[in-house]
Image (cartoon, rainbow, N blue to C red; front, side, top):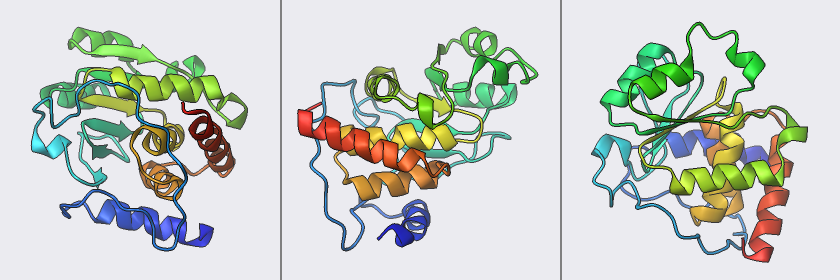
Length: 212
């Protein structure tokens, strides 16, 4: 089944116009999922624009930003520019989550926090990079943010590689999809570091078994 995940990831994104929610991959065995904790209203319940609430994970255009996807009021992306943040605010984005390290942000040619907050968006910096920093605590915090932060949310790192790991954990434990589908979505979003997948799978299995 692992060899089919890249194709599955492409199909999940290609199915943007379909009315159905993402389904488990054919032949996979669903992993037990913990009940979703209480969270903020869904994007649809909050009355967000339809382009931000597709029924499937969709590729999306946000100014000059690369690798942008959207589902249920969450935009995932590579590093946005100042122009992209302005475009995000024009779409109604309320919350920005950045998972790049401070040293990485020194190479960005604008102050992301200042721009985001100047546009009226809440800015949260939750930095990490590499398998050793993909901890249970980090994934717990990421999931809590995606559940609770006001939507729409712009969730980014440098290329969406790290974002894909957090996305997969959130979708498996809080979105009710099986782990193979969640991993495929994470790869569609941008996860490409091979070491992230087993860590996410292990985390999801343990949290599901413990009810959290």
